[in-house]
Length: 137
Image (cartoon, rainbow, N blue to C red; front, top):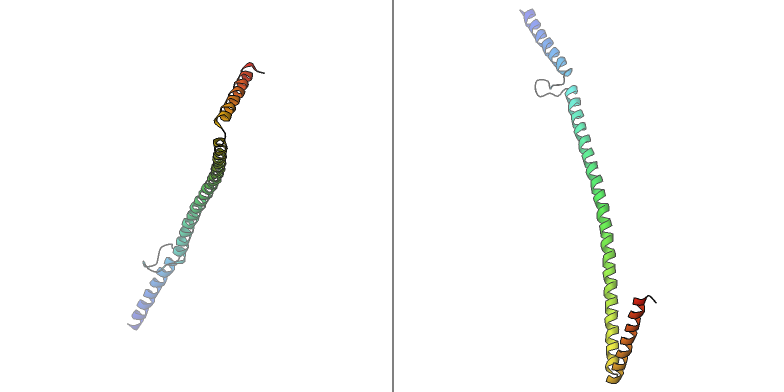
């Protein structure tokens, strides 16, 4: 009877040992909750592959962002050039307005007869330039 009990215990131990060894050789968790080396390796490989794909996606997105940044920088440079031209034009317009005001003040101080003579000279000069341009001389 003791022999039967001992043999029963040894049989149970042998079956348990065989199950444990068989589970270690598989890729599935043993008894549903103990992770085997194969299972862990498989999960690590799957996670590594997912991380690699995610990294590739991030790198592609980064390249797209760098290209967009380059285009935005080009547009910013163009806008700065346009703004510089606008500022230059405003400055020149302001200078011309000041000059026109100065000429207007000087003309206001001249006698009417002098202004009429000046207008007549300008008109004759313009007529002469127009005739020369039309005849090709």
